View 1 (tube, rainbow, N blue to C red):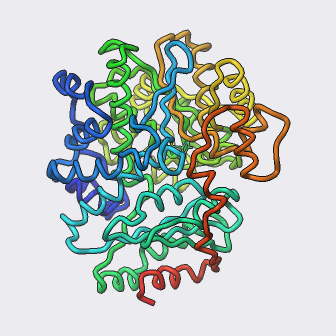
View 2: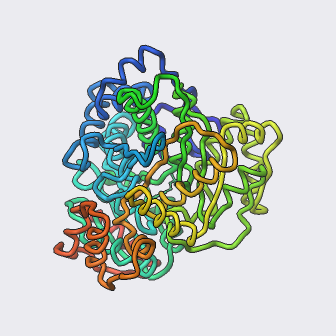
View 3: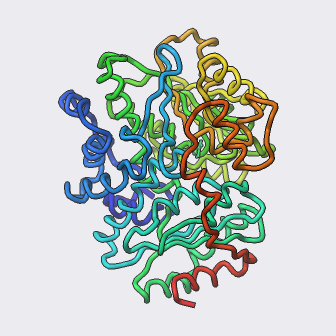
Length: 489
Ligand SMILES: *Cc1c(COP(=O)(O)O)cnc(C)c1O
Protein backbone atom coordinates (compact mmCIF):
# COMPACT_ATOMS: atom_id res chain seq x y z
CA UNK A 1 0.00 0.00 0.00
CA UNK A 2 2.71 2.48 0.89
CA UNK A 3 3.94 2.92 -2.68
CA UNK A 4 6.38 5.81 -3.10
CA UNK A 5 5.86 8.06 -6.10
CA UNK A 6 6.89 11.53 -7.24
CA UNK A 7 4.51 14.46 -6.81
CA UNK A 8 3.92 14.51 -10.57
CA UNK A 9 2.95 10.84 -10.51
CA UNK A 10 0.61 11.29 -7.54
CA UNK A 11 -1.19 14.16 -9.25
CA UNK A 12 -1.42 12.46 -12.64
CA UNK A 13 -2.64 9.17 -11.19
CA UNK A 14 -5.06 10.69 -8.65
CA UNK A 15 -5.31 7.50 -6.60
CA UNK A 16 -2.74 4.75 -5.99
CA UNK A 17 -2.93 1.49 -7.93
CA UNK A 18 -4.05 -0.23 -4.70
CA UNK A 19 -6.82 2.30 -4.14
CA UNK A 20 -5.09 4.27 -1.37
CA UNK A 21 -4.72 8.04 -1.14
CA UNK A 22 -1.41 9.77 -1.70
CA UNK A 23 0.07 11.83 1.12
CA UNK A 24 3.41 13.67 1.23
CA UNK A 25 6.13 11.53 2.74
CA UNK A 26 7.07 14.39 5.01
CA UNK A 27 5.38 17.72 5.55
CA UNK A 28 7.87 20.49 4.89
CA UNK A 29 8.36 22.86 7.84
CA UNK A 30 8.28 26.62 7.43
CA UNK A 31 11.28 28.34 8.97
CA UNK A 32 11.33 31.81 10.48
CA UNK A 33 13.07 33.02 7.35
CA UNK A 34 10.27 31.52 5.24
CA UNK A 35 7.68 33.38 7.30
CA UNK A 36 9.49 36.67 7.05
CA UNK A 37 9.77 36.29 3.31
CA UNK A 38 6.11 35.29 2.90
CA UNK A 39 4.62 38.17 4.86
CA UNK A 40 5.30 40.88 2.31
CA UNK A 41 4.36 38.78 -0.71
CA UNK A 42 1.18 38.66 -2.81
CA UNK A 43 -1.05 35.58 -2.88
CA UNK A 44 0.52 34.23 -6.08
CA UNK A 45 4.05 34.72 -4.80
CA UNK A 46 3.18 32.98 -1.54
CA UNK A 47 1.61 30.13 -3.48
CA UNK A 48 4.79 29.74 -5.52
CA UNK A 49 6.98 29.45 -2.40
CA UNK A 50 4.65 26.99 -0.67
CA UNK A 51 3.99 24.79 -3.72
CA UNK A 52 7.73 24.55 -4.36
CA UNK A 53 8.20 22.94 -0.96
CA UNK A 54 5.98 20.06 -2.02
CA UNK A 55 6.47 19.82 -5.78
CA UNK A 56 10.13 18.97 -5.60
CA UNK A 57 10.09 17.48 -9.11
CA UNK A 58 8.73 20.70 -10.68
CA UNK A 59 11.04 23.47 -11.88
CA UNK A 60 10.62 27.05 -10.62
CA UNK A 61 9.42 28.04 -14.06
CA UNK A 62 6.76 25.31 -14.03
CA UNK A 63 5.47 26.27 -10.60
CA UNK A 64 5.28 29.92 -11.57
CA UNK A 65 3.42 28.97 -14.78
CA UNK A 66 0.83 27.00 -12.77
CA UNK A 67 0.28 29.63 -10.06
CA UNK A 68 0.18 32.64 -12.36
CA UNK A 69 -2.31 31.04 -14.73
CA UNK A 70 -4.61 30.10 -11.86
CA UNK A 71 -4.57 33.11 -9.55
CA UNK A 72 -5.02 36.36 -11.44
CA UNK A 73 -7.55 39.14 -11.45
CA UNK A 74 -9.37 38.00 -14.59
CA UNK A 75 -10.45 34.88 -12.76
CA UNK A 76 -10.76 36.12 -9.19
CA UNK A 77 -12.74 39.24 -8.41
CA UNK A 78 -10.18 40.39 -5.88
CA UNK A 79 -6.43 40.90 -6.08
CA UNK A 80 -6.04 39.18 -2.74
CA UNK A 81 -7.56 35.98 -4.24
CA UNK A 82 -8.60 34.84 -0.74
CA UNK A 83 -10.27 37.82 0.92
CA UNK A 84 -10.48 38.44 4.68
CA UNK A 85 -13.55 40.21 6.12
CA UNK A 86 -13.83 41.23 9.75
CA UNK A 87 -17.04 39.92 11.21
CA UNK A 88 -16.32 41.48 14.61
CA UNK A 89 -13.26 41.97 16.76
CA UNK A 90 -11.05 38.92 16.46
CA UNK A 91 -13.33 36.96 14.13
CA UNK A 92 -12.18 36.85 10.53
CA UNK A 93 -14.20 35.50 7.62
CA UNK A 94 -11.86 33.88 5.11
CA UNK A 95 -13.81 34.38 1.88
CA UNK A 96 -12.77 31.64 -0.50
CA UNK A 97 -15.46 32.34 -3.08
CA UNK A 98 -14.24 35.21 -5.24
CA UNK A 99 -13.35 32.83 -8.08
CA UNK A 100 -15.28 32.22 -11.32
CA UNK A 101 -17.95 29.91 -9.89
CA UNK A 102 -18.46 31.72 -6.55
CA UNK A 103 -17.52 28.74 -4.35
CA UNK A 104 -14.32 27.63 -2.65
CA UNK A 105 -13.74 24.72 -5.04
CA UNK A 106 -12.27 27.32 -7.41
CA UNK A 107 -9.26 27.80 -5.11
CA UNK A 108 -8.06 24.32 -6.04
CA UNK A 109 -9.77 23.67 -9.37
CA UNK A 110 -8.33 26.77 -11.01
CA UNK A 111 -4.79 25.50 -10.50
CA UNK A 112 -5.34 21.73 -10.75
CA UNK A 113 -5.46 21.65 -14.59
CA UNK A 114 -2.03 23.29 -14.73
CA UNK A 115 -0.57 21.02 -12.04
CA UNK A 116 -2.04 18.06 -13.90
CA UNK A 117 -0.81 18.93 -17.39
CA UNK A 118 2.62 19.87 -16.07
CA UNK A 119 2.77 16.56 -14.18
CA UNK A 120 1.59 14.59 -17.20
CA UNK A 121 4.38 16.08 -19.32
CA UNK A 122 6.83 14.48 -16.89
CA UNK A 123 5.29 11.06 -16.39
CA UNK A 124 3.00 10.59 -19.39
CA UNK A 125 4.68 12.61 -22.09
CA UNK A 126 2.59 13.85 -24.97
CA UNK A 127 -0.68 12.42 -23.68
CA UNK A 128 -3.91 14.34 -23.65
CA UNK A 129 -5.58 14.31 -20.23
CA UNK A 130 -9.27 13.39 -20.20
CA UNK A 131 -11.25 14.39 -17.13
CA UNK A 132 -14.60 12.78 -16.33
CA UNK A 133 -16.66 14.27 -13.53
CA UNK A 134 -19.90 13.12 -11.94
CA UNK A 135 -21.36 16.04 -10.05
CA UNK A 136 -24.25 16.91 -7.79
CA UNK A 137 -23.68 20.59 -8.58
CA UNK A 138 -20.72 22.70 -7.48
CA UNK A 139 -17.74 20.54 -8.36
CA UNK A 140 -18.79 20.02 -11.98
CA UNK A 141 -19.02 23.71 -12.72
CA UNK A 142 -15.78 24.54 -10.91
CA UNK A 143 -13.97 21.77 -12.82
CA UNK A 144 -15.40 23.01 -16.15
CA UNK A 145 -14.19 26.55 -15.46
CA UNK A 146 -10.80 25.28 -14.37
CA UNK A 147 -10.18 23.07 -17.40
CA UNK A 148 -11.83 25.36 -19.97
CA UNK A 149 -9.42 25.83 -22.89
CA UNK A 150 -6.43 24.45 -20.97
CA UNK A 151 -4.18 22.95 -23.70
CA UNK A 152 -3.94 19.14 -23.87
CA UNK A 153 -7.05 18.53 -21.78
CA UNK A 154 -10.67 17.52 -22.42
CA UNK A 155 -13.38 17.55 -19.79
CA UNK A 156 -16.79 15.91 -19.69
CA UNK A 157 -19.25 16.43 -16.85
CA UNK A 158 -22.30 14.27 -16.10
CA UNK A 159 -25.01 15.55 -13.78
CA UNK A 160 -28.28 13.93 -12.62
CA UNK A 161 -31.13 15.44 -14.63
CA UNK A 162 -33.30 16.18 -11.58
CA UNK A 163 -30.56 16.38 -8.99
CA UNK A 164 -29.18 19.90 -9.39
CA UNK A 165 -30.74 23.34 -8.89
CA UNK A 166 -32.00 25.35 -11.88
CA UNK A 167 -29.12 27.78 -11.45
CA UNK A 168 -26.50 25.05 -11.20
CA UNK A 169 -27.90 23.42 -14.33
CA UNK A 170 -27.75 26.67 -16.24
CA UNK A 171 -24.19 27.29 -15.04
CA UNK A 172 -23.16 24.00 -16.59
CA UNK A 173 -25.25 23.92 -19.77
CA UNK A 174 -24.01 27.37 -20.84
CA UNK A 175 -20.35 26.49 -20.22
CA UNK A 176 -17.96 28.00 -22.75
CA UNK A 177 -14.72 26.47 -24.02
CA UNK A 178 -13.55 24.32 -26.93
CA UNK A 179 -12.56 21.30 -24.84
CA UNK A 180 -15.65 20.93 -22.65
CA UNK A 181 -18.86 18.91 -22.77
CA UNK A 182 -21.76 18.46 -20.39
CA UNK A 183 -24.48 15.84 -20.35
CA UNK A 184 -27.44 15.17 -18.09
CA UNK A 185 -28.19 11.57 -17.22
CA UNK A 186 -31.53 10.03 -16.44
CA UNK A 187 -30.81 8.92 -12.89
CA UNK A 188 -29.50 10.22 -9.59
CA UNK A 189 -26.02 11.29 -8.50
CA UNK A 190 -25.04 7.73 -7.56
CA UNK A 191 -25.93 6.56 -11.07
CA UNK A 192 -23.73 9.29 -12.54
CA UNK A 193 -20.88 8.44 -10.17
CA UNK A 194 -21.11 4.70 -10.78
CA UNK A 195 -21.27 5.26 -14.53
CA UNK A 196 -18.15 7.42 -14.51
CA UNK A 197 -16.24 4.90 -12.39
CA UNK A 198 -17.22 2.12 -14.78
CA UNK A 199 -15.94 3.95 -17.84
CA UNK A 200 -12.81 5.00 -15.98
CA UNK A 201 -11.85 1.40 -15.23
CA UNK A 202 -13.18 -0.31 -18.38
CA UNK A 203 -10.05 -1.90 -19.92
CA UNK A 204 -11.44 -1.61 -23.46
CA UNK A 205 -12.04 2.12 -23.08
CA UNK A 206 -8.72 2.72 -21.34
CA UNK A 207 -6.94 0.90 -24.16
CA UNK A 208 -8.77 2.86 -26.82
CA UNK A 209 -7.65 6.07 -25.18
CA UNK A 210 -4.06 4.85 -24.90
CA UNK A 211 -4.02 3.97 -28.63
CA UNK A 212 -4.97 7.57 -29.30
CA UNK A 213 -2.45 9.06 -26.92
CA UNK A 214 -4.98 9.99 -24.27
CA UNK A 215 -5.44 9.05 -20.63
CA UNK A 216 -8.04 9.52 -17.91
CA UNK A 217 -7.28 11.46 -14.78
CA UNK A 218 -9.33 12.63 -11.87
CA UNK A 219 -10.33 16.07 -10.64
CA UNK A 220 -12.10 14.91 -7.49
CA UNK A 221 -11.08 15.84 -4.02
CA UNK A 222 -9.02 12.75 -3.29
CA UNK A 223 -6.43 13.97 -5.81
CA UNK A 224 -3.45 15.40 -3.91
CA UNK A 225 -3.40 18.19 -6.50
CA UNK A 226 -6.65 19.48 -5.06
CA UNK A 227 -5.60 19.39 -1.44
CA UNK A 228 -2.23 21.08 -1.87
CA UNK A 229 -3.56 24.44 -3.16
CA UNK A 230 -5.84 24.60 -0.12
CA UNK A 231 -2.89 24.59 2.28
CA UNK A 232 -1.74 27.78 0.57
CA UNK A 233 -4.70 29.91 1.64
CA UNK A 234 -4.37 29.02 5.30
CA UNK A 235 -0.69 29.96 5.34
CA UNK A 236 -1.36 33.06 3.28
CA UNK A 237 -4.18 34.19 5.58
CA UNK A 238 -2.00 33.90 8.66
CA UNK A 239 0.71 35.96 6.96
CA UNK A 240 -1.86 38.52 5.85
CA UNK A 241 -3.19 38.97 9.39
CA UNK A 242 0.36 39.44 10.68
CA UNK A 243 1.08 41.96 7.95
CA UNK A 244 -2.10 43.88 8.77
CA UNK A 245 -1.07 43.84 12.45
CA UNK A 246 -4.27 42.08 13.42
CA UNK A 247 -2.15 39.46 15.16
CA UNK A 248 1.50 39.16 16.15
CA UNK A 249 3.67 36.41 14.71
CA UNK A 250 3.17 33.37 16.94
CA UNK A 251 -0.35 34.25 18.14
CA UNK A 252 -2.65 31.23 18.09
CA UNK A 253 -5.79 31.28 15.98
CA UNK A 254 -8.66 28.81 15.97
CA UNK A 255 -9.99 27.74 12.58
CA UNK A 256 -13.62 26.87 11.87
CA UNK A 257 -14.49 24.98 8.68
CA UNK A 258 -17.88 23.95 7.23
CA UNK A 259 -17.03 20.39 6.35
CA UNK A 260 -18.16 17.73 3.88
CA UNK A 261 -15.44 15.58 2.40
CA UNK A 262 -12.90 16.79 4.99
CA UNK A 263 -10.57 18.34 2.39
CA UNK A 264 -10.71 21.96 3.50
CA UNK A 265 -10.19 21.29 7.21
CA UNK A 266 -7.45 18.76 6.48
CA UNK A 267 -5.57 21.50 4.63
CA UNK A 268 -5.77 23.63 7.81
CA UNK A 269 -4.36 20.68 9.79
CA UNK A 270 -1.46 20.33 7.34
CA UNK A 271 -0.78 24.10 7.55
CA UNK A 272 -0.62 23.75 11.33
CA UNK A 273 1.82 20.86 11.06
CA UNK A 274 3.98 22.97 8.78
CA UNK A 275 4.33 25.53 11.55
CA UNK A 276 1.32 27.87 11.36
CA UNK A 277 0.23 28.49 14.98
CA UNK A 278 -3.35 27.31 14.70
CA UNK A 279 -5.16 26.33 17.89
CA UNK A 280 -8.32 24.22 17.70
CA UNK A 281 -9.54 23.06 14.32
CA UNK A 282 -13.31 23.21 14.53
CA UNK A 283 -15.24 20.89 12.25
CA UNK A 284 -18.77 22.13 11.49
CA UNK A 285 -21.42 19.83 10.00
CA UNK A 286 -25.10 20.12 9.06
CA UNK A 287 -27.73 17.51 9.97
CA UNK A 288 -25.48 14.89 8.35
CA UNK A 289 -23.41 14.88 11.52
CA UNK A 290 -21.36 11.71 11.13
CA UNK A 291 -18.15 13.69 11.68
CA UNK A 292 -19.45 15.41 14.82
CA UNK A 293 -20.11 12.04 16.37
CA UNK A 294 -16.78 10.66 15.19
CA UNK A 295 -14.68 13.49 16.56
CA UNK A 296 -16.55 13.39 19.87
CA UNK A 297 -16.60 9.61 20.37
CA UNK A 298 -14.00 7.99 18.12
CA UNK A 299 -16.64 5.89 16.37
CA UNK A 300 -17.40 6.55 12.72
CA UNK A 301 -20.82 5.22 11.82
CA UNK A 302 -22.23 5.80 8.35
CA UNK A 303 -25.27 3.65 9.05
CA UNK A 304 -27.77 6.47 9.48
CA UNK A 305 -30.35 8.43 7.53
CA UNK A 306 -29.14 10.72 4.80
CA UNK A 307 -30.54 14.27 5.10
CA UNK A 308 -31.04 16.62 2.18
CA UNK A 309 -30.24 20.07 3.59
CA UNK A 310 -29.93 23.71 2.52
CA UNK A 311 -26.13 23.27 2.68
CA UNK A 312 -25.99 20.51 0.03
CA UNK A 313 -22.22 20.52 -0.48
CA UNK A 314 -21.93 19.12 3.04
CA UNK A 315 -24.54 16.38 2.57
CA UNK A 316 -22.02 13.56 2.82
CA UNK A 317 -21.85 10.38 4.86
CA UNK A 318 -18.40 9.21 3.82
CA UNK A 319 -15.69 11.85 4.11
CA UNK A 320 -12.87 10.41 2.03
CA UNK A 321 -10.12 12.74 3.18
CA UNK A 322 -10.51 11.57 6.77
CA UNK A 323 -8.35 8.61 5.77
CA UNK A 324 -5.43 10.98 5.30
CA UNK A 325 -5.88 12.51 8.76
CA UNK A 326 -6.12 9.14 10.50
CA UNK A 327 -3.03 7.91 8.69
CA UNK A 328 -1.14 10.83 10.14
CA UNK A 329 -2.64 10.58 13.63
CA UNK A 330 -1.80 6.88 13.99
CA UNK A 331 1.83 7.42 13.05
CA UNK A 332 1.45 6.22 9.43
CA UNK A 333 0.41 2.72 10.48
CA UNK A 334 -0.90 1.18 7.22
CA UNK A 335 -2.26 -1.87 8.96
CA UNK A 336 -4.50 0.09 11.31
CA UNK A 337 -5.93 2.16 8.47
CA UNK A 338 -6.56 -0.99 6.46
CA UNK A 339 -8.42 -2.61 9.35
CA UNK A 340 -10.59 0.44 10.04
CA UNK A 341 -11.53 1.04 6.43
CA UNK A 342 -12.23 -2.64 5.80
CA UNK A 343 -14.59 -2.46 8.76
CA UNK A 344 -16.20 0.66 7.27
CA UNK A 345 -16.93 -1.08 4.00
CA UNK A 346 -18.11 -4.30 5.65
CA UNK A 347 -20.12 -3.02 8.61
CA UNK A 348 -20.45 0.71 7.91
CA UNK A 349 -18.46 1.67 11.00
CA UNK A 350 -15.16 1.59 12.83
CA UNK A 351 -13.74 2.83 16.13
CA UNK A 352 -10.24 4.29 16.38
CA UNK A 353 -7.89 3.36 19.22
CA UNK A 354 -7.29 5.41 22.36
CA UNK A 355 -4.05 6.94 21.09
CA UNK A 356 -5.69 8.33 17.96
CA UNK A 357 -8.73 9.45 19.94
CA UNK A 358 -6.54 11.46 22.28
CA UNK A 359 -4.80 13.26 19.43
CA UNK A 360 -8.11 13.79 17.67
CA UNK A 361 -9.61 15.57 20.69
CA UNK A 362 -6.47 17.59 21.20
CA UNK A 363 -6.49 18.99 17.66
CA UNK A 364 -10.20 19.07 16.81
CA UNK A 365 -13.57 20.11 18.11
CA UNK A 366 -16.79 19.26 16.29
CA UNK A 367 -20.35 20.54 16.23
CA UNK A 368 -23.38 20.51 13.98
CA UNK A 369 -26.60 22.38 13.33
CA UNK A 370 -29.83 21.83 11.42
CA UNK A 371 -31.47 23.94 8.70
CA UNK A 372 -33.54 26.03 11.14
CA UNK A 373 -30.45 27.00 13.12
CA UNK A 374 -28.61 27.70 9.85
CA UNK A 375 -31.30 30.15 8.69
CA UNK A 376 -31.52 31.74 12.14
CA UNK A 377 -27.75 32.29 12.11
CA UNK A 378 -27.81 33.91 8.66
CA UNK A 379 -30.52 36.29 9.93
CA UNK A 380 -28.75 37.07 13.20
CA UNK A 381 -25.36 37.76 11.61
CA UNK A 382 -26.99 39.91 8.95
CA UNK A 383 -28.92 42.03 11.46
CA UNK A 384 -26.07 42.35 13.97
CA UNK A 385 -23.09 42.85 11.69
CA UNK A 386 -24.58 43.63 8.25
CA UNK A 387 -22.71 40.59 6.96
CA UNK A 388 -24.49 38.16 4.70
CA UNK A 389 -23.21 34.61 4.59
CA UNK A 390 -24.29 31.58 2.61
CA UNK A 391 -25.84 28.47 4.16
CA UNK A 392 -22.60 26.47 4.43
CA UNK A 393 -20.72 29.32 6.06
CA UNK A 394 -23.61 29.89 8.48
CA UNK A 395 -23.23 26.34 9.79
CA UNK A 396 -19.63 27.21 10.65
CA UNK A 397 -20.60 30.49 12.32
CA UNK A 398 -23.18 28.71 14.45
CA UNK A 399 -20.74 26.01 15.56
CA UNK A 400 -18.11 28.68 16.26
CA UNK A 401 -20.55 30.43 18.61
CA UNK A 402 -21.32 27.18 20.39
CA UNK A 403 -17.66 26.35 20.75
CA UNK A 404 -16.96 29.68 22.42
CA UNK A 405 -19.90 29.30 24.75
CA UNK A 406 -19.01 25.76 25.70
CA UNK A 407 -15.27 26.22 26.23
CA UNK A 408 -14.74 29.91 26.97
CA UNK A 409 -11.77 29.75 24.56
CA UNK A 410 -11.44 33.35 23.39
CA UNK A 411 -8.55 33.03 20.99
CA UNK A 412 -9.16 34.87 17.71
CA UNK A 413 -10.59 32.80 14.90
CA UNK A 414 -10.73 32.32 11.19
CA UNK A 415 -14.05 31.07 9.83
CA UNK A 416 -13.82 29.58 6.34
CA UNK A 417 -16.53 31.11 4.15
CA UNK A 418 -17.04 28.63 1.34
CA UNK A 419 -19.63 30.13 -1.00
CA UNK A 420 -21.07 33.46 -2.07
CA UNK A 421 -24.54 33.98 -0.57
CA UNK A 422 -25.75 34.54 -4.14
CA UNK A 423 -24.87 30.99 -5.04
CA UNK A 424 -27.57 29.73 -2.65
CA UNK A 425 -30.01 32.65 -2.95
CA UNK A 426 -33.23 30.55 -2.67
CA UNK A 427 -32.09 29.29 0.76
CA UNK A 428 -30.46 32.51 1.98
CA UNK A 429 -33.36 34.86 1.15
CA UNK A 430 -35.94 33.31 3.53
CA UNK A 431 -33.47 33.88 6.38
CA UNK A 432 -33.64 37.65 5.94
CA UNK A 433 -37.01 38.42 4.31
CA UNK A 434 -40.55 37.17 3.74
CA UNK A 435 -40.68 38.49 0.19
CA UNK A 436 -39.22 35.89 -2.11
CA UNK A 437 -39.67 36.24 -5.86
CA UNK A 438 -40.23 33.01 -7.79
CA UNK A 439 -37.79 33.84 -10.58
CA UNK A 440 -34.11 32.95 -10.00
CA UNK A 441 -32.76 36.20 -11.37
CA UNK A 442 -35.26 38.30 -9.45
CA UNK A 443 -34.06 36.50 -6.34
CA UNK A 444 -30.54 37.73 -7.06
CA UNK A 445 -31.91 41.27 -7.44
CA UNK A 446 -33.83 40.97 -4.20
CA UNK A 447 -30.75 39.77 -2.35
CA UNK A 448 -28.88 42.73 -3.80
CA UNK A 449 -31.56 45.19 -2.66
CA UNK A 450 -31.29 43.91 0.89
CA UNK A 451 -27.56 43.30 1.22
CA UNK A 452 -26.12 45.90 -1.21
CA UNK A 453 -23.51 43.29 -2.09
CA UNK A 454 -22.59 43.24 -5.75
CA UNK A 455 -24.21 40.38 -7.68
CA UNK A 456 -21.40 38.20 -9.08
CA UNK A 457 -21.30 38.83 -12.82
CA UNK A 458 -20.83 35.12 -13.43
CA UNK A 459 -24.32 34.47 -12.02
CA UNK A 460 -26.11 37.57 -13.34
CA UNK A 461 -24.98 37.01 -16.92
CA UNK A 462 -26.25 33.43 -17.04
CA UNK A 463 -29.62 34.84 -18.01
CA UNK A 464 -28.25 35.97 -21.37
CA UNK A 465 -25.95 33.06 -22.12
CA UNK A 466 -26.67 30.53 -24.82
CA UNK A 467 -27.42 27.00 -23.70
CA UNK A 468 -24.89 24.76 -25.46
CA UNK A 469 -25.55 21.34 -23.93
CA UNK A 470 -29.05 19.92 -23.96
CA UNK A 471 -28.46 16.14 -24.12
CA UNK A 472 -29.89 13.86 -21.50
CA UNK A 473 -28.88 10.23 -21.81
CA UNK A 474 -29.60 6.88 -20.17
CA UNK A 475 -26.80 5.71 -17.92
CA UNK A 476 -26.05 2.87 -20.34
CA UNK A 477 -25.23 5.47 -22.98
CA UNK A 478 -22.59 7.31 -20.98
CA UNK A 479 -19.69 5.42 -22.50
CA UNK A 480 -20.87 6.32 -26.02
CA UNK A 481 -21.07 9.97 -25.02
CA UNK A 482 -17.48 9.88 -23.77
CA UNK A 483 -16.13 8.16 -26.88
CA UNK A 484 -18.17 10.48 -29.07
CA UNK A 485 -16.73 13.58 -27.47
CA UNK A 486 -13.21 12.26 -27.88
CA UNK A 487 -13.84 11.42 -31.55
CA UNK A 488 -13.31 7.69 -30.84
CA UNK A 489 -16.84 6.39 -31.33
C1 LIG B 1 -17.31 21.40 -1.10
C2 LIG B 1 -17.90 22.40 -0.17
C3 LIG B 1 -17.80 22.28 1.24
C4 LIG B 1 -17.14 21.09 1.90
O1 LIG B 1 -15.74 21.09 1.79
P1 LIG B 1 -14.89 19.75 2.03
O2 LIG B 1 -13.51 20.07 1.63
O3 LIG B 1 -15.52 18.71 1.15
O4 LIG B 1 -15.02 19.42 3.47
C5 LIG B 1 -18.35 23.28 2.01
N1 LIG B 1 -18.99 24.33 1.47
C6 LIG B 1 -19.11 24.48 0.13
C7 LIG B 1 -19.85 25.66 -0.41
C8 LIG B 1 -18.57 23.53 -0.74
O5 LIG B 1 -18.72 23.68 -2.07
